[in-house]
Image (cartoon, rainbow over all chains, first blue to last red; front, side):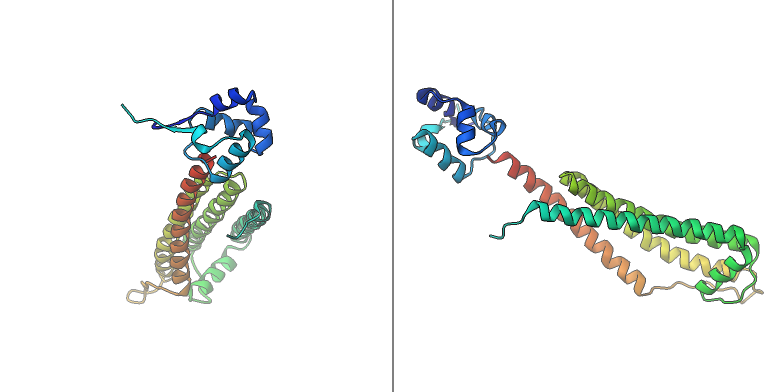
Length: 69
Length: 180
């Protein structure tokens, strides 16, 4: 996939667990795990907004475009 | 955008499923009553079916009455099938299984088309059976198309549309589930 989810990296930098983030932004741990693993078909703007708000980061810190080889 | 409360929709779906269960029980009761009437008063039942076919006060032979009863029961079985499948549509929706609901709706549509074809054949067959004992030249063969058939066509078209809409809805639901 060309879009890489860097949520793990940002979570590690903030020393925050995915469980805490899920509780803070009000989505299930299972859904957050799907997002972290890059298996989600899409991300809603309000989910992205909540993640960025909770982690104090920009969408670009979480999502990265990598060109396919 | 209108916000739809799933609980309200679920309540309606449950009511529809229960209503269809009641319809199914009524159809089954009607079938049992027909069989009971056939056994208890074969000639009386024959006259009743003769009346329904448009040939009142006919003294039908036993084979004619049984053939008419089987024709009528065939129609009843098809209506029971429609009620059963419609019930399955709402049962699946209640469980959130949209794909299964779409399959059942497609089944309802097919059974409605089958019912339409059967009712056309059955009414023709019924007239032929009732007039079978008539002298040569008086036996009738009639093909009828009434408002009930038109209603069935409309219902089948609506069921076809509904099944297509549910297939599309299932795809959208799957998509919605995969977007976080």
